Length: 178
Image 1 (cartoon, rainbow, N blue to C red):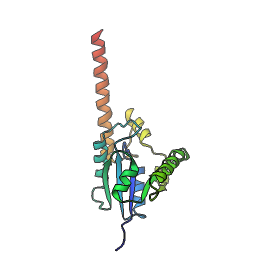
Image 2: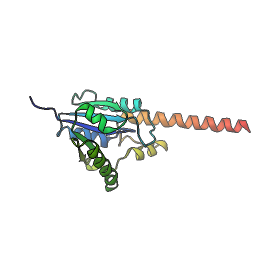
Image 3: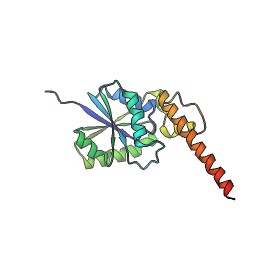
Image 4: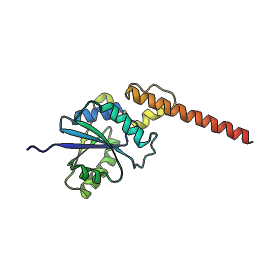
């Protein structure tokens, strides 16, 4: 019986981008199955809740049986062990990503020596895309349709429209208080 080659692709996916999607699709040439692991705990301040991020990613890969989406909490290596995986997939965009990713990979290797971290570069047209940049564009009403799937673009528009309404309501209530 052949062992299944399972790769874990962790991240916040806040939001999921075409760059993330490209890394998952390309990793399927290396793995029989990929688990996109949506992190609950992150030093980043996420715009979307873990459930919202899970839903956006799950919608992208619905109908692709080789890809599953799960939410995880705590240490990545514990999740990788629990899944019985030996490979952690990480996307690298720029040299600036490398130092942080190298530290994470080295630390994960010390904590779980049986797992290897595999770095994949997205295709050139997705190399510059970052979730942070996309959120900034969307926050100012820019068109993000070249960077994210349509349902993600709509979610960004809704999220920033709601936050703008809340900001305006807060400003109005502050004026009334004086």
